[in-house]
Amino acid sequence: MRMILAVALGSAVGGVARFLLSAWIEQRTATSFPYATLLVNVSGSLVLGFVATYTFETTGVSPELRALLTTGLCGSYTTFSTFSLETVALAEEGTLGRAAGYVALSVTLTVLAALLGVYGARQLVLLRTH
Image (cartoon, rainbow, N blue to C red; front, top):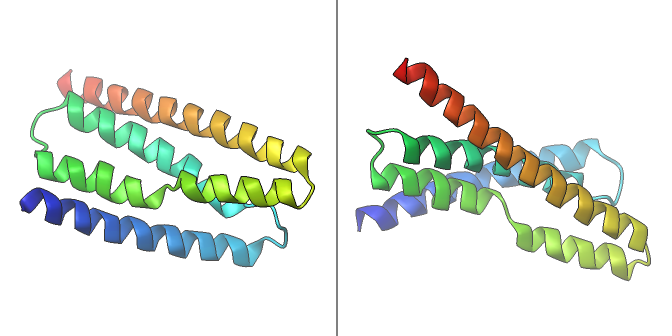
């Protein structure tokens, strides 16, 4: 039950954070290109890469806290289902080039962000152990 509550709490925080950040970005961009989802997916991949690596490679992080941060917070913050639907919408608008660019940017940047998160966590682990 503690694990379920941890994931639920993380999900609530991640969902609200995604909503607020997306709304803030959409208010500042006057375009149909889904910059908000792109930024959420990139930043979420960075955070998930860091948190997952750090919490698995150090001691003292409970399974509940790990689940709260990874499955809960990051899982509800990043949503590739939205990414997929927006890609379809761009394609249906007849902007296949923009749809392809969105897919390429999303996949490339999120994978690089996750790699950066993993690297950053490992550097922090090294600092703490030396």
